[in-house]
Image (tube, rainbow, N blue to C red; front, side, top):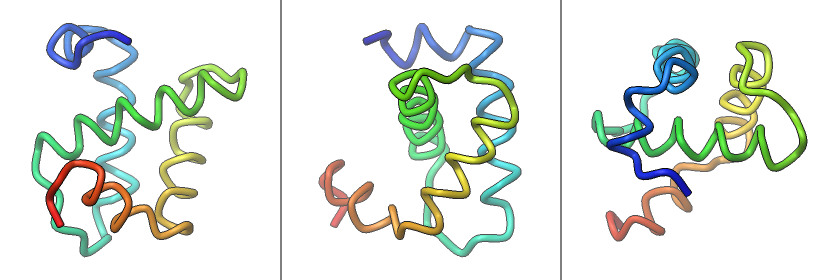
Amino acid sequence: MTELKDLEKDPDFISSYAIVRDVFKDELYDLSEQDFKELTQEIMLTCESVGGDVDEENIRFYAQEYIKNNFYYRFKKIRGQL
């Protein structure tokens, strides 16, 4: 797995991050900047693990799926934030 600090320079990460932020802009989750970066990385890995690309359509789809499937508690718990 690529380190997040290295991934942040990747053009795919930069565009995916912007898409994730856009999808979540109207949601009322308490997510820090670091949370958004880790969430973006997780969504990108999800896209790749199901055989998809990290294009806008896939990133947007999985970001919306995370919201629909109440990701927040699991996401925060895994990171020791709950």
